[in-house]
Image 1 (cartoon, rainbow, N blue to C red):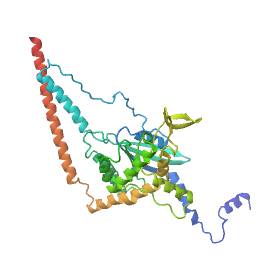
Image 2 (image 1 turned 120 degrees about the vertical axis):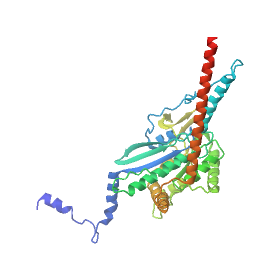
Image 3 (image 1 turned 135 degrees about the vertical axis):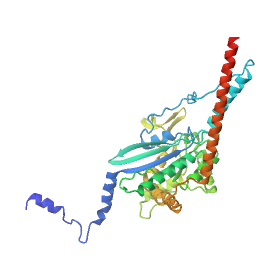
Image 4 (image 1 turned 45 degrees about the horizontal axis):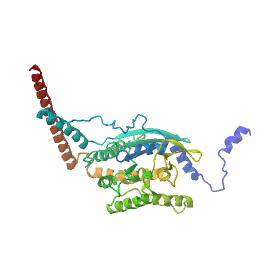
Length: 390
């Protein structure tokens, strides 16, 4: 028998003990198929402006998800519409009224500022494993003077992704369905308050049955260790008081090793995670680290003694599959069953119709005000031409 025949025959011999069939190798087949297909994950970040959401996300995944975003300066360059008026006793009543109307429109723009949805997708590969990561940012959240129902856009986006997945799942071609459902939501809480704001409570209660909510205390370097622990306890107490359902890590199985059990215990005790983000490399104790440099010292992003950044990333990576399963088995199934109860109708609810009517009325009022300003400007121009002729 030639060497080649021996090699071919060796591929089908049983090197194991008698009675071994081989289906214990099935997990390896699933692993190879999963690695070849790649993974998909959608993360939503919600919070007021200036809490470092974009910086933290870039720090978590060591990538730049917002290469074209321009960070505004402290001199107020982000204000594209400004109105400065100094009253002079020689001004006519029409001029004064016109300036006050212009100020009213600027104030109206601030009051009615809407929340935008920005989804950024990046392909990340690490040791042959591909991850299609989609980060959904929500600029404008909480920035308006009247923030009531400012999160309706966010809820509509989450429902739309469920609706799209349900439509694709019910279609003819179900082999290549792109999963854009939101699997996890990092909700950023300001460290400057004494707990949750009313807006925080309303938003988390509105989405806790639609997505896995993970509360995050932003800019933890503004707090001392004692203040941080006090704020964590206060937030957890308020979450329990208002009946908010946040994402709870699953308990470690009895057959898991002790290190994993201890890691799970520490992660559970760290919620809400108090984090610091930074994309800058600085030198500390003779080595390059990512952190923030202050006159009194260095805050290292990946130092667990300084903040919970590593714990948050460990939670996200080690429980990414569980987040997807909870989204599929709980949140999506609730949406799907509710849709089936309504006979597949997607029609707007009465409350949504009332909101649309109110919005149309406001737009009509805005058009009337604009027409009034145009008439006043024409009258003012005509008055100025008449004075010039004299």
